[in-house]
Image (cartoon, rainbow, N blue to C red; front, side, top):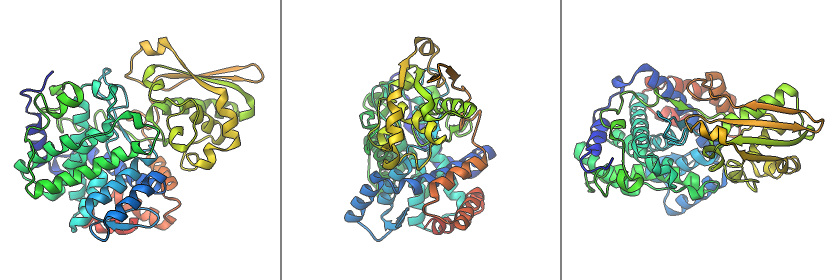
Length: 466
């Protein structure tokens, strides 16, 4: 529908203003703490990526010496907005951050937004720069931003993503803005200005998938959210109905909105609980994960080695084949959107983590030898089943003449129906932080995050991370 009289900006502003920790169901808090731990690990791991290093150097050359920490190998202090930019870029640099699930089949499954990093990077920066923020206040801001981001991503028409916008950059801006606003304590009028500014700042287009600029979308979302909140606190004005009307966010970015997905639905239920969030087992596009797990099952069940394989064909629909667009990977960023590389990595290493997404591994002779024997194929029967599930089929032809077939599991690993256990989540955090933290510090961080609502001051967690 069009957005002439939808009152969506008013609904979002009201939700942000009124949300309290006591409103959150226990399950929302439990999942939120898992998302925070996951996101912190990804910020640490991503800080070593070239895109995060370049953004960090840019920020240091522009301003330094105050506010909040940009985490990583050599932590530095930056103004809050720049810290959010660096940490937000790092958090998405490996494409390992969680994904929001769609509630209906007309939304391309798994492609709504990466909900954690924008509000997490914004909340970390504002909490540290403000000082004296409790874990309970931090969680309140994070969950509020997470919910606002998810409902905005859910409500905009699917043409938004299909026509080329990257919703983690666009909707993510609102998540970061809402989280920052909650910690700063903006009033209702200021929140209207905040959302109007965020509507103009929201950006990111899919042409840059597979390049450094994809994680920059998320970094800019975090930075823009913090900037908008600080400007709104200072009295900066914007249209107080920035999400509504013929020139508002929903109409301009998506050609319309499903109002019933957002008005009177914020926190009813919380999206982090229902339909839930997918915590990624692999550092690449979530659309690839069921196929990678299917390949891993074939490899492990048959103890396959790369030299055993004559050809691998991955059959899927356009929801997987279009965005996972590279037929060969020349660097670790292209590798994340290259099914031949991903299935090769699974075959060679029987896993895919930090070490597999490095220049050395991408250019390894074994990888270069196996990728040409792996291809994708459009399957009209899979396409006809719709986009509500990430459906695919792996067919592996061996040099001895056998063909092994495995369908991807609809209940994909990491999703709400088959979530990573706490032990698996900690294992992922360990992989992400191994180069930066010792075992004792890592264990202390895990304990602190899982007890975050009892933390008197977020400075305790910040000090553990640096």
